[in-house]
Image (cartoon, rainbow, N blue to C red):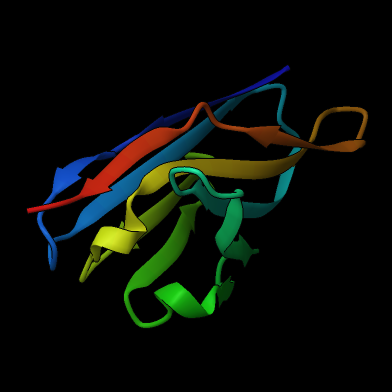
Length: 120
C-alpha cells in the first residue's frame, strides 16, 4: 500500500507564489512518473505537469514559464513551484504518482488534493 500526502496550498494574491509538495510512503520499490493535476471549480481535472526521472519534464501550455515541477527521489517527493499566479489558477491540485512495489507491478496513486485560491 502507498500513501500520498500533499501540502502547501492556500490563499495567495495574484502575482504571488506557492510551493506544493507531495510525499509518497509505503511499499515503494520504484517510482517512475510523478505528476500534478488540477481541477478548477466546475471543470474537469487537467494535467498541469509531469516529471520522469530527475529532469525529464513537460508542462501544460497554460503554466509554461510560470510553474516548475521537480522531485527528490531520496524523499519520494514531488514539488510544484508556482509563480506569477493568476485567478484562473484557482483549483484543487492533486499529485499522481506511478509506483511499483516489491512485485514490480506499477500502479497509479492519487493524493488527497490541496486547495489553491488566487484572489485579491
